[in-house]
Image (cartoon, rainbow, N blue to C red; front, side, top):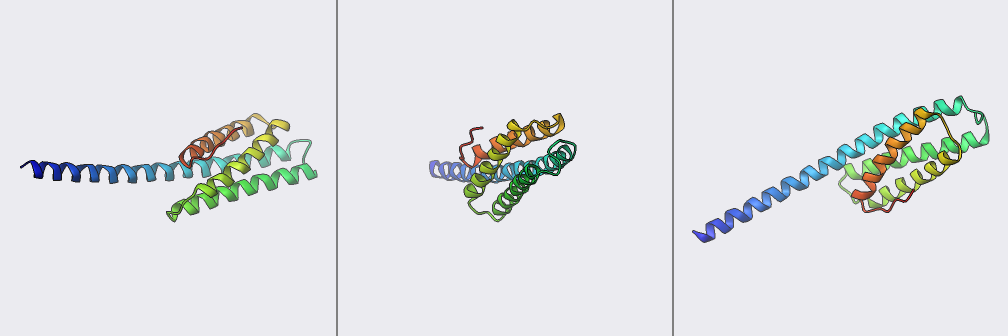
Length: 139
């Protein structure tokens, strides 16, 4: 009888652990989707803010736009790596690095409040992603 209880307890722990792992994976997938959505929103507000700023048409605008596009690309890569069940730590590190560059740029060149709000949402997403993938992020 004791042996049956141990076996049933072991099976319960195994099934419960597997269910928790699946839930954690789904949670990361949702976080990545939210990050992607917020990044898209930020990119649009950034473009709009740049078009209405004194930086419009300058090389600074071009450089900043390339930063944002590179960041968007890194988020897409991170999501693809994660979706393929691969180790996404390196892709997360790349996204964090690009986010830090944009954050530094936005502190130097203040844009409108919509862009700042959208960026703050992305930063919050990035902090959660960095924690999941054990990547240091220091703004």
